[in-house]
Length: 211
Image 1 (cartoon, rainbow, N blue to C red):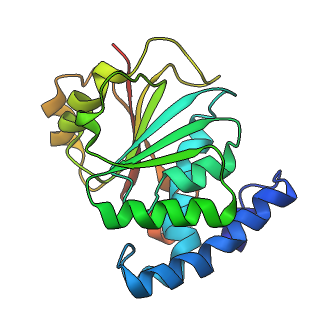
Image 2: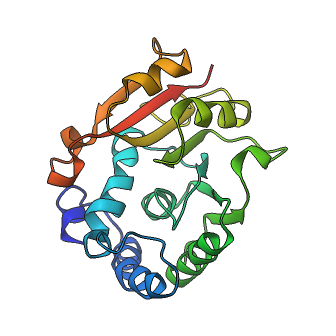
């Protein structure tokens, strides 16, 4: 947990308690359902929690914003972001039911009241709109954008970035960005420039604004 406090220092007691509880909960659940790589579970706070918070550093959501997490897996980036932004509403989605079961259990255990988790593919969600979509290494950027563009509403619920898709990616992004046909408007930042930790080499935050 020290690695989070290295970069962020303005947490309430409740937020500190919630972050502190994550390690035990995920280690316990990982024994039953493999939601985090075995080799990464001991680096939970750096490789999963802090990594997720790169989105918070670049795009601090306004109070009342609504955010959808696409393919949340075990709850990343959605759970850390929901702790960080208690006045923002998060919908966490995944097509694998047992992963959503873990997300729901973790959210309940730490008292997260701003999270709803559903077993669904994001493209199957109808009749709802959001200010931002977030994700972490779920699918090619072109697919992500195709799925979420119709459900992101126009506007700006952050002081930094207008509404859109903001996601965590790794490796060489050139082809992924080119495949979207949106190269001129896409922005990318190195996570290592935000949090200079060894595990963030070749990791990026990619942002696509709502068209």
